[in-house]
Length: 354
Image (cartoon, rainbow, N blue to C red; front, side, top):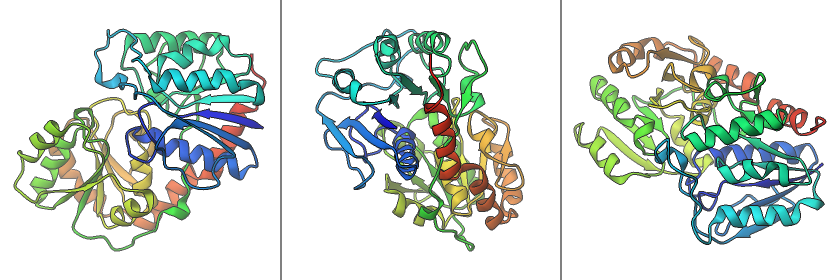
């Protein structure tokens, strides 16, 4: 197939601005490229991309789009002047005839609304749960008109929306060759994600404080004020700010952790870092909330506790540390390999569409 993929308009790829969508996009490119498909990509100027992943690349200038998750639920649709979002979809409209299908990775109103106006089938992989009324409406409307063209990562995410049919669930895929198994960890806890209030870093910091272990923190400091406020709640040195790292360096440091803490305050659609940790043999201690709760096999790859219960999370850590790290990695590999993801993607994109 000839497939045109449209990236997130949050900013250039490789800087962490797109959050987990960036990792998902790279997995999709790798998975489909391995199957012999012709791939083209629309992304922002300044994007960093591994050589050979795409056959054709359009890099567009423009103003990044504001994330829906940082707006009020009743906020109107907003598209800034000279926006990346508009430029991305102008390019897609103009180039569509050369492709069999198009795949949208951005969580934005415009591409969903444009679906009926494309001559070629336009598919959407929805990357977040419900965060705004306008997005809820356009996702539900598109899924009603084109039920085979809207897919989700997890059942918990899809349950946020009014859908006419059972949701199409793709999960995600990972190249486990990029993640080194580490059998012997340090007395170190880990946490990874955008540094923003909905990610719940403050809870992980309190767990680390109760255990007296340092907490390595990876991710883009999206909210500097929030990061400073969290750091002020624990003694100096409790938090080790590691920054946003490329996968090879991130996995090398992540593998040193005895456990990864996952503490979202909202309904995470998937939770890429959960699988990345398990790929290194690091078991995950997470709240039973959203997508991550579907990724963890209790007692095999991690432990789940009630949401927002810091005491329960701290108390569950001994149980987590007894988990076999090699078995943790093998279970994750069985469920989230790049090959299995590629098969699910192909089945979705190659089906007859309406």
